[in-house]
Length: 259
Image (cartoon, rainbow, N blue to C red; front, side, top):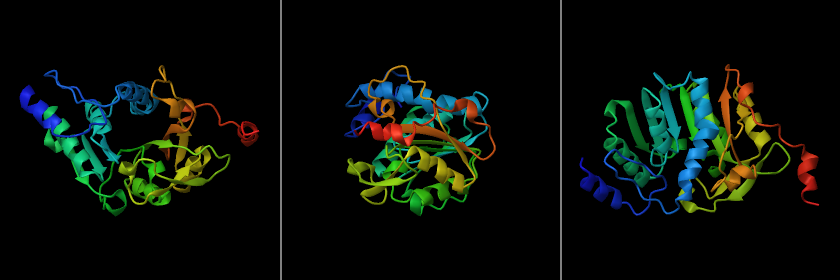
């Protein structure tokens, strides 16, 4: 499609959460330009370690992107050489955006599919080498069911990026969604602590390693700076220790901040 047609189709959407750039000079508009840096830094935090573990590319890999939004990370996977990407997203509008982006990028239709669905009602029935679960765990009420779904794909690697509770224990904190558009099942959600993520992954035979942040610019990254958001890579058999972040402060150190 030409630039004018693409601009018209982009403008038909009232909101874009990610900036996409196309060869003809067209970009998707975003309300907060600081979010461009956010995605650059998040890529450093969790996507580049994924590529490192995968030999520098995702060539030949099948990737499942749960809660894929408008396909930003699915596109990163395709551009890293993934053979096929399946995105599952509850928002029909976001899936329409993802399909437009992939069409405009000229991605072969045989290499991707985006399905509108509640992830907890989705029948997978396929195997994937990599699962992306980015910004999903902390906005659902059924974290165990989410891990069941991911494990059913029999992946080599799971990349998990999640908001965290700062409570000093292995627990899930009951919370209410601030942004209703993030709703997957219920408004009341269970936000994990860092240790809860590791323990829950262990129930499925997975080692979960909190990733070193490697962030060079914390603009629009306050949640990562404060450790209220963090990415993990999970695997059953890959050695992951070299990717690990600093150990979590002991519980009494956290409590001291309340005094």
